[in-house]
Amino acid sequence: MSTSISTPRKAPKKGFGQWFAATGWRHLIGVALCIYAAFPLLYVLSASLNPNGTLLSSNGFFSTIGFESYAKLFANEQRPFAAWFANTMFIGLTTAAASVFLGALAAYSFSRMRFKGRRFGLVSLLVVQIFPQLLAVVAIFILLTTLGEVYPGLGIDNQIALIMVYLGGALGVNTYLMYGFFNTVPVEIDEAAKIDGAGHARIFFTMILRLVAPILAVVGLLSFISTTSDFVIASVVLVSPENQTLAVGLYSYVSEEFTSNWSVFAAGAVLAAIPVMALFLFLQKYIVGGLTAGAGK
Image (cartoon, rainbow, N blue to C red; front, top):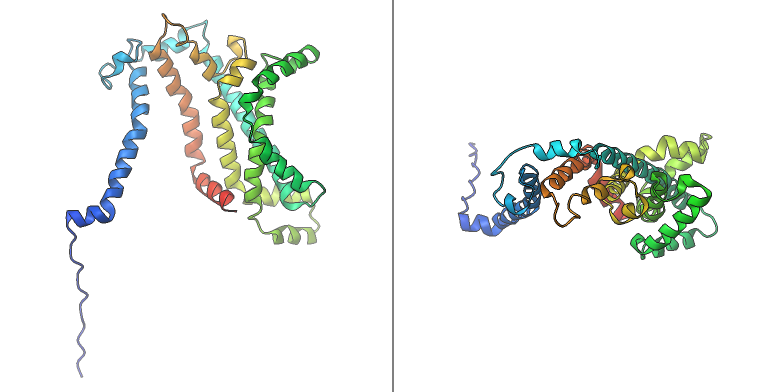
């Protein structure tokens, strides 16, 4: 008895119209969004390479290429770009690390411990976030001015004081974001560790922190971006040019009406974006998992 082997039929090729109706329009939208997102980046890069110093003369993309604007950034003694860059990295990295550490401690306490006032504390974190930190600029200035008279290390024109202000405004939302992720970690892990004699501190530092690494990376990245790009609060707290951050210092290049140098400003913006981009690429593998898991819970 002979058996015949049937060959699978090839699927008919789709025409351009069918392909576009099925998936092609998605590719078109994706390309359009990429162009829309890349246009301002290319415009700023082109302006930074144009030594004419105006944005209107930069309409032709990369028509004139020169690195004079980058050289002027480091040659101007009255506007110390290197000091601004170092100040921004110090404030941004310190704030990000402290936000991650303190937020993780608070989130672990709310997630694993049961104590009086726990629910009220969680609700208070949400209520506080309704009011943006920008509304408290006047109060922050008065508080730091008064505090500086008693302890100059936490007064106006001090970077530590600015870090404290950033931490006070970010801990609430960071704690609540981490709290949702901590709840996804099974409680059985804690119970098994307690049977072996481990306390809360050992469980937190040796086990839980490794399991919640994605949300730690997300919170650290968001804190770093928000602090390095802040202008209003940093301009109020930091007064001396040598203590200012990049956002405040670079504004001086375009704040004057007749001496604005947009090319130098664009060059500084390009250099200021490099640390954020490098940190984003370094933490990219954690970002998606941290955001989706924390929000899903």
